[in-house]
View: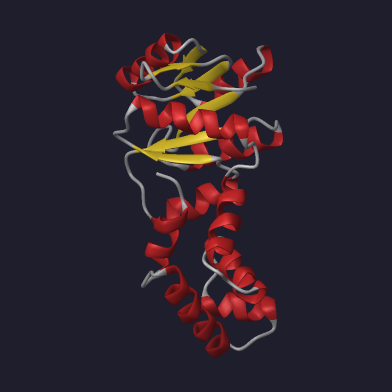
Amino acid sequence: MIAQKIVESKHWELKGRVLVVEDNEITGKWIVRKLRNCGLESEWVVNSADALEELSLKKYHAVVSDIYLGESMNDGLEFISRCKELDIPVIAITAKADLRMAKDCLNSGVHRFLEKPFEMDQLIQSLTEVWENPRGLSILVERYLEANGLTETERKISRLCLKGLSNREIAAVNGNTEKTVKFHMTVIYDKCSVGSRGEFFNSILPT
């Protein structure tokens, strides 16, 4: 699946089928209308059960899903995990982004992450990148770590940090002391020009 941008006219020309999972009617219909205007086939459903049924009936090339499908984000994350099993790339959208959500999205297999409100160009760009590079967030992480000159040890610790492990948990996994992990994290922050885990996440994850 290849997506192309017509730069001169600042319009997008795309081919593919996208499922939108959004429990807010106004937002869901807006996304579908905009996607169709770009040439994409698109359908909208309001919950994960309807989404899974739709995926069983048609072939979709990508899913755009809210994290909060109801009061909890558990349904959204479980649905995203199911999409990962089906090998369908997911772009997660939410109006309530935080560090915990970023970790959960990374571990659930999200390919891109957009915070509401977003421009349609951002969504189209994300779809383009997903189709051109199906490996998603994991490859972005590796590129970031490489670009900032992290050693293999620092990369390993960074990956565990991004999965949400504490310094103590990282030390247990690596067979190091917590003091050693803290030292490595300080070096990692310095190389990446960040001052905390929150800044570390925000500097890597696309929003």
